[in-house]
Length: 336
Image (cartoon, rainbow, N blue to C red; front, top):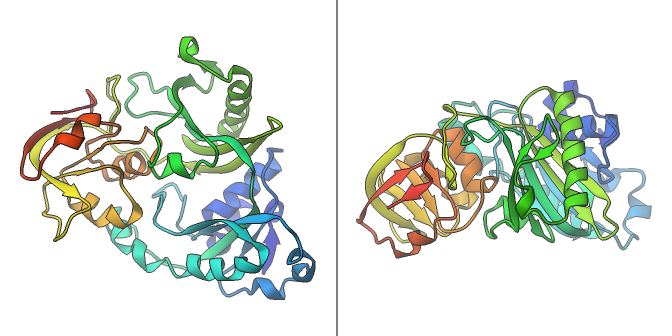
């Protein structure tokens, strides 16, 4: 059955997945969520009653995976399943099938997280937001000794931030419960970002667990909530003011990616940015170092879940050579 997002409840997650039901919850607590639908496994959107009218629209749509185990709290499956953006309505059915076919590629990640991958892929289809800025708030940063959160954003669509292909315009330490920015001296777009933090606090109070919240702001300064999922935290709180992720320190030999050949277990994975197809290498690695990305990027999310020491945004890593010995310290945010 195809349902509008506002109709979904948490108990629907087994059919429609954690992402879809999380969006349903955001709708119910009166957050601005882009209009859309949840499509259960096996459902045909071209048989949906409004299809004939919708296929004439000039709007563009995001087609997003929503597996029953995705965003479950046990594992985020960040970047493991496909998302397709800016699809015209006539291209939505093909994008749905691409998302459904992406399940098998997530098995190595599931095994590393100790999660049995089961169930069929549901899909979310939503109207695209013409974002001026878009970003992520994590309500608890495991590298903050006091457990404060982190707000990061980029200009335009937020996929550049989430996949780590672009560094944040700003990376701000935030107290979500107190609705405070702790980096006010360096803060741009104060009014807009204050509104983001206000809504994130509302969402946090409702879910009552640490969250990873995605959002976007359009040209009229309207805030759209795109996702709210439980933040999977591994390890302990640590001090540090760098871009360290996770905990611990590792000394090991560098293996750069992308490169030919198999990744050697126990090496330090060094790359410009991680991508979903690198998860098998991330699992084998002793530590992860990226040249770009912030504390809310793909590398950071997966490293937290795997419990791997990680340093993101490490410009010095461009000079690291294969077989070079480096020391990665997640608490200090250094790789040398």
